[in-house]
Image (cartoon, rainbow, N blue to C red; front, side, top):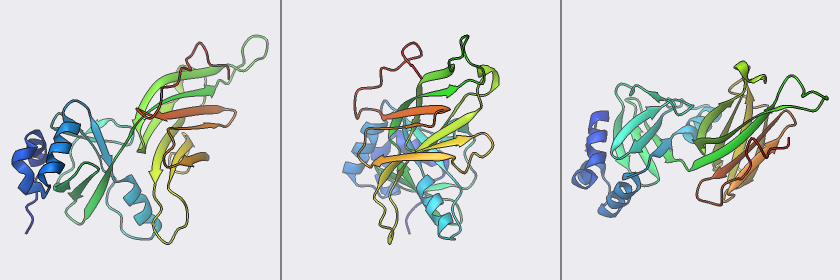
Amino acid sequence: MRQRLSTLGFISCTAALMACVGANAATSSEAASITAQMANTAVIYSNTEEVYFDAEAGKEAAPKLTISVNSGKVTYLDDYDVPIPAPVGVSVVKMAPDIVILNTGKRTTELRRGNPIKCWASVRKDKTKPGGKDDWHFVGELKSHDQGGRIRIGGGESGTPAAMFRMRTVYWPQPSTSRPSKVLYIHTAEDPERAVSYSWANIDASRVGVNLRWIQVSCTIEGAERGSQVSKDTFRG
């Protein structure tokens, strides 16, 4: 029977992964790859896609789980990548470069590796500029990942309605004929689950954007191309 590790064991094992290969059923090459990936940068994994498609198929879905692994330390995150306490009873079944499989106590669940994204977003303000032109609340250098990580913008003292956006990397299960895609979703504060609009691009796209006239968002897969040069000073609405 495959040995399962506690969350504490996951942290300790990741820190000294080569010594824990047997416990995680990973090959030495997988272990070396994971160790290199986690040495100096955070790697995010999430089961967003599994949870979504299980629910759509009427199956009992696992709880939404997202983790960040950085230099051997595992941190659980909420939908906005904010650290939260580790869930009770969750254990590790397998770690590999692109997936982590956890056991929730009721079932196993697969967390896919997320690609980091860097975005800018701008929301139109409720009041216009002197002279009647639209005024915009612009924010750059917004970071998340393409496994459903969410980013808030606007609301409060910004003078704009609150909004949220997220990106998914979607591989539709059979028998769907939909092609794998990068999908960018826009949400209002009133309904954080059902998007008011979305745009999509080829699965290999390095950038996805959307312009709904009241909100504009552009997200680049980090490392895929040169980052956007748009800033608060150069944005023109």
